[in-house]
Image (cartoon, rainbow, N blue to C red):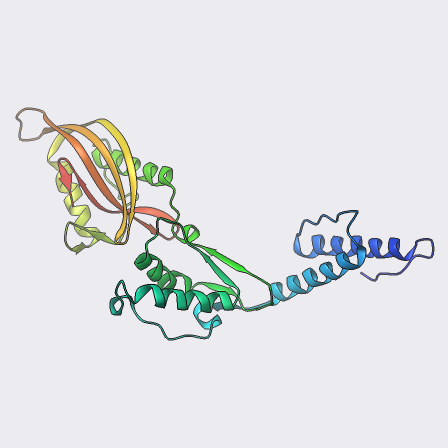
Length: 272
């Protein structure tokens, strides 16, 4: 849109009118919501709007690039080569390389050094960002955007998993069950886990969930764990007295493809 000075306006009023047109163009082209203060010098506002327009145009037309390529593919040590004395220095070196390229990584307090270092290598480095570097521009990457720590979401999935596990009214379909599973010591396949679940369920002619009490989420280097109290009762096909199971359970959870999934279970009366 061509900007022309109006003979009926003062130079300052013409600048303000031009800024309004620039702001309108930004809203129309890029969906930006603009607010221009009445007391701000129009010359400064005009320069700022020009910079924003230039940035938006570059951003819109930029390709995508992995963060690791963006920062120059630096050499780095794998976690197994580092210990408590060498890990902090290597971690700070990689962080500084990211900062030098305008990438700020937000780290929650509960994430320890080893987990954070693995996060840099496994999540940040392959993550794709716009292939532009404008001085002063900051790209923020938040750990919790990659690994959301929302106890209520985890609790909901745990509770729904347990309801499906303990309800004999319909076949178990594997809702919220991961492909990446493990027992106490080893990895197991989803098929193995489903076999264990179905064998457990076919043992009983009746299962009654009595109580479920969520405790807390534990975030550790090896994974995320949900602790809960549970009580359930069952009547076996083989007969005998009603079985009662009560106590503390733990379920290992994994954040996969933007959803929390069950990776391992250990609770009174059942585990895999």
